[in-house]
Image (cartoon, rainbow, N blue to C red; front, side):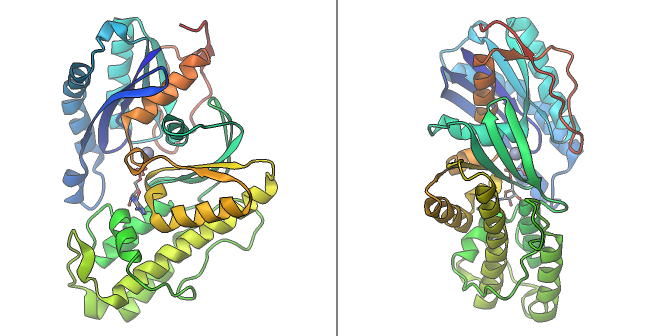
Length: 355
Ligand code: KG4
Ligand code: ZN
């Protein structure tokens, strides 16, 4: 089965082809430079860029592989959650193409695709636990099969990547700040007492990062702002003053430590689950990867994470998820709605004969 995957939920337009469970090719146009000028993604600009790039990228993808439009048997597209204008661009394109190519159509849950994409590079087995950490989401999942993912806990306020981005922006880093935050954190000295670990005095698997963000904001304004307000964060952050680097390392640690507490709680609730899948942009965070690996090892389990290139939004994860669901005989009818952020994604897939 040859699957085309289309991603346009935020600020990356990306299309990929997966054949027999393996990635054949991928194209990607990132808008992050444009949105960096505004300190965050501007939805109208994002939609226009997706609209401008979609067709051109699709032709480019097919040109770089030996696959022709008529060879495509399944077309999957990020159906939500995300920014509505961008999603609509991708979904309309995918539906039209599915009709033209007479291919199976699938509207893919973008968040599920992040988690399932580890199967492209690792032997993913079910059931397992999943941790999704991105700019918009922080969620723990139970994955029973490619089509059965249940949320065990999520953030009540800010997503973890949002916390990195907001504090990074306050410090003067270019947006998105997570990667630079990570880089600088590795050079700083962690003070484990500097920041609180928010929302741990409960017995659930939910997260809350707004209190930590407020604490960091106040501390920065009290102790560092006067001296470092004009500090310029260059692309290669070697020259960061040690007080700033230590602040960044300690904030990074407080976030990672909080996630680890909840992860250990999930492992205690599901002791038979030995595999954890991590995904989303923040899964690229070095300390998070290290601490999660240690936690899973201590519990006799393993962690699977996509390579850094697959952590950010990409078409490969959509193509691969479409392939998994298509293999299991699922499809969507062409009249399914596109789902913006904040609206639950309905379970409306149909089962049909496998192509
Ligand atoms: O999954 P993603 O590419 O986009 C969505 O949010 O859907 O995640 C982007 C987020 C941003 O908040 C970015 O700052 C963060 O991931 N990020 C990181 C790292 N690389 C990207 N956060 C921490 N450490 C990193 N190395
Ligand atoms: Zn994403």
